Length: 53
Image 1 (tube, rainbow, N blue to C red):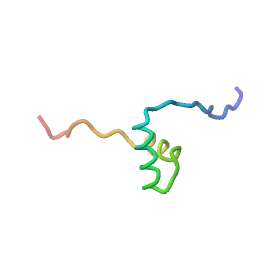
Image 2 (cartoon, rainbow, N blue to C red):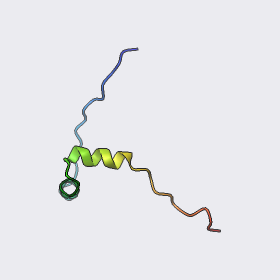
Image 3 (cartoon, helix red, strand yellow):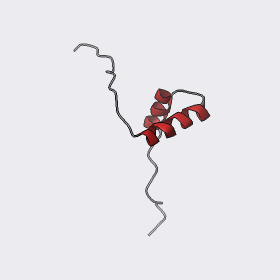
Image 4 (tube, rainbow, N blue to C red):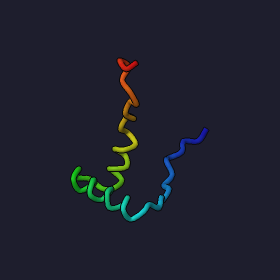
């Protein structure tokens, strides 16, 4: 099987979403791609505690 590199896929987002991504990038000292990588790597929060009945 041939080794394939990840493909670049442009995604269109609303201006408000882009603004949040830009501000997050500025506060983290990265670019929008860095913010997106961070968001993809962050584990999903648990929906509830195991102690709850």
